[in-house]
Image (cartoon, rainbow, N blue to C red):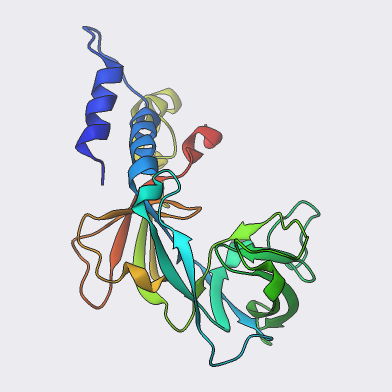
Amino acid sequence: GYTPGSIRTFIDKVGLTKVDSVIDMSLLEFYIREELNKEADRVMVVLNPLKVVITNWPADKVEDFEVENNPEKPERGSRTMPFSRELYIERTDFLEDAPRKFFRLAPGREVRCKGAFAIRCEDVVKDPETGEVRELHCTYDPDTRSGADVSGRKIKGTIHWVSAAQALDVEVRQYDRLFSVEDPVAQAKKEEKDFLDYFNPDSLQVIAAAKAEPGLKGMAVADRVQFMRKGYFNVDIASSPDKLVFNQIVGLRDSWAKRK
């Protein structure tokens, strides 16, 4: 998924030297992130879905909302997304016992669905055996329509979502550093270990059934997009007409720097 332009910029900025040196991978990631921020359309894909039922929304009603493709390039226009009684949101966007500064969904709290309405969590449905949250029952406020909000309330949190009935099942492959330390060979010598001891078991995570907005259908191999709030991805050659497969190019932020 790395573009020729990002690699050329990386080489230009690093420059030439007669001395052997190691350049941090995060620098290359910075340049691909900078390029794709301008070029990649934003789309909504829910990686770890949690069902939301909007109890005061008619069961058979589907309304299309206009969502911008790329705020960095208004000329890229917009697309429509269906909004219905049942949605999927990220499981991490809900906490049953949320701290005061958690600005996403929690019992009795509200959050804005990007490009649509604000919803409030009214009830939590759990699996009777495991206690795991199975779905949320919420209500929407018609006065909070995005772009025409007349509620007078300031809603701090905004999350991405997809309509359950129209959502596409897609596979998502997320990549992390192959090793858990910056220089596994040097670390192994220092600690008298095998460099394979520092292999990162979480360097590849495959999400087999992520939920994507229906507008992604028909994307071609190598097409690049930004999954809102997640990172940049491209369509893998393993995709089929029945199911898209996405590879992560780079995350929105450098998470490696925080771990070092």
